[in-house]
Image 1 (cartoon, rainbow, N blue to C red):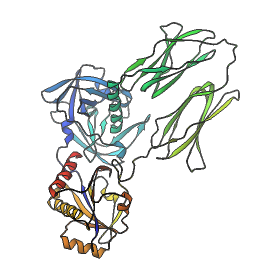
Image 2 (image 1 turned 30 degrees about the horizontal axis):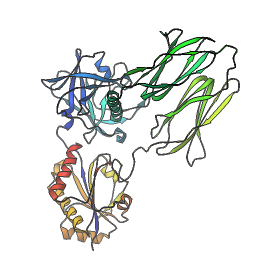
Image 3 (image 1 turned 60 degrees about the vertical axis):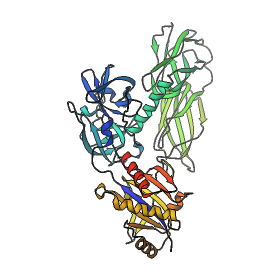
Image 4 (image 1 turned 135 degrees about the horizontal axis):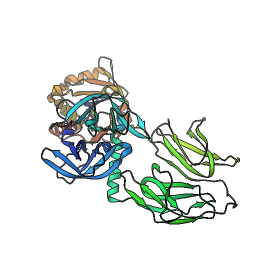
Amino acid sequence: MILPVVLIMVALCGCGSPAIVGSLVKVQADSAVVNGVIIDQAGYIATGSGALGNSTALSVEIKPGQSYEGRLICRDSARDLALLKIEAPELKAALLGDSDLVRQWDEVTVWGFRPGDAAPIESKGSVTSLPKDEQITYLQTNAALDPSLAGSAVLNKAGEMAGMVSWNADQSGREGFALSSNEIQRVLDQAREAESNPLAVASVDSPSVFSDRAVISWQTNRPATGQVEFGLKDTYGNKTAPDATMLNTHAAVLQGLAPKTTYYFRVLSVDCCGNAAASKGYTLTTTAAGAQAGEFTISNVDVYDITSTAASVRWITSKPATGAVNYTADKETESDSQSDDNPVYEHKFRLNWLKPQTRYSVTIKSETDFDESVQQTLSPFTTPPTSPVGCKMNNRIFDFAFKTLQGNEFSNKDIAGKKVFIIFTKTSCPTCMKQALFLNDVYRDWPKDSEMLMFMVASSEKQADVEEWIKRYGLVMPVYMDPTAELVSDCQFRTIPTALFLDTGSVIRDIKSGGFGTQKEMAAAIKHFYEQVR
């Protein structure tokens, strides 16, 4: 009987110096030498902001005797991250991994230079927690660290950069912390945009003016902070409290103004890299003290910073008022709520403990001390998934549960933290059978000390037929059973054979339909993948 067969290869990264060593650099900042990592072949280098001090004259040594002038592109003090840029040929960039796939107790290795050392050292440990601070994600590790390793690379088991050691002397309690790679990628994307598209104030709305206050609203072309300068002259002299939230739409309330008085103002914004933009000057004139205070209203409503488990909501009221927000997940009857009884103009709430990939309905409400009340229902928002599950690129593979020929279970938990090569085949087609034989040869020739695992999964077949098939073709790989063909059915591939490459987080990194032409081609593809994510 001809059987459909699934073949799976699993690799666990072995020993030897990882590729990251070629991406480590030393940054000379005044009298200090700071670790750095090349994160883009265009010359971007990540390092610690606090470790640089106030130095602006920077030199980057990519190897002994080879240094380049470093230009400071971005300094994000909140993340203790600075991005430099050098002009140098043939740079080797670190591969930034997806830090959202990091789990507690995952193994990590820190690579960096200690003072005076010519070669980098490694420090092994585990991820002890995944803390957040003001919505910035970190990894905390028990690897042996000290301040001299600020700016060093933190690698996951696949050899990808999962974070960078953060050790800012101004931020106590950060021992063992590393800024996550997704935070670094986010700032890198913004730094690239900042170079090609400088920050600018796109527009300033007509202010809402009262006798003792005014609401100023404006837009920037990229996410940035917000602040307003104002005063009785065009030299201003006063500033609102800075809003550090990175947004495209901004609002601020000027308080303590005098009635029937003309004020000068301009808006200020700063992006994550420290680039500033200011509007031209404007004027406004407050109303008379006895003038009608106006209707109590809500304005400048925004839902932002939406993650798989949280979202932020903000709004401004025309008078000091309390604030409350109610939010309900689809198909649920009970709602959650948050409130603040302090009468203020600007209202901000962070909605935590949300469910991934879920649609939420939101209602906000504010009330003054004079029983004036206003309520507004917002447009629903949907949280993104934590990690999409499926059989597409950048999706985590579906859960599966196979059986060994001895009746034991082998599941997706058994490939966690390992590299995987999968081929879906059917023995009824000659091309598919070639794939099985090719992979069997790869398994036979692969170095046993590399901790590479290779096995086959037969779907919708009787065990006796599988055992006979193994004997007929002389296959030496372990074979597992999937009687219901659940994984094959879930993937719904249009072409068989199809090959999948999974990283150590069981995320699909590459797909090849139609199989390989030769055993040599298959072996080369597997070797390339194995080395790329080491």
